[in-house]
Length: 231
Image 1 (spheres, rainbow, N blue to C red):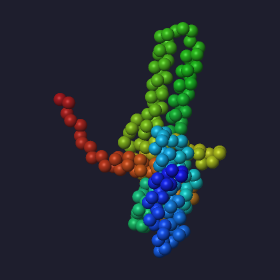
Image 2 (image 1 turned 90 degrees about the horizontal axis):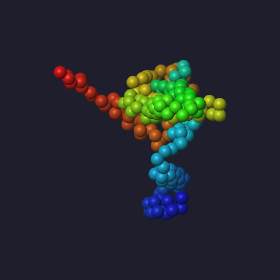
Image 3 (image 1 turned 60 degrees about the vertical axis):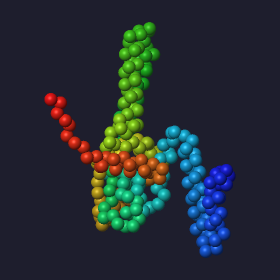
């Protein structure tokens, strides 16, 4: 932290510190935010994988709506994708939510099949041909599992989000955000917005919102064209 502060933070901030017109409390808060951002980024640059807990703020950091807020209503989970700038400036007429589909049951079934096949392997008695057949079946199931984690096989309409542990007794997901399942709630529909707000339980962290929004934009930016004739 000290190396980061003196190499990256202090050389940029020392020109601000002596200015009397600056509010000291505001300056301290800005400096803390800047330091925290650099520290977080420096640690992220050292890894290729992150823990699922790093994806979320649980509970959400603020009560008001923000891009990436996750809620549940009538047993369906949703994530807010309305741009943050529109919400902050109160320029949005609607709030847009993408439905989150739990893939926990699908993953459990895949794991059960893999476990069953591994148990079959343990019972074999030097039957090489049968062992190869079982190993191929295991590899097939493991490929299905990897596809579920990689946005359903990189489907343009899906975005993978890891499991959310709300508390010690409750967890949700993992999920696929379904871009082709979007709902709109009018800003003046206070009853429905209140229901959604009361059940808000997590927010996607700032580091992972851009990936969600980028894939969402890519999905709606597709134009497409009819397939060509093969004859």
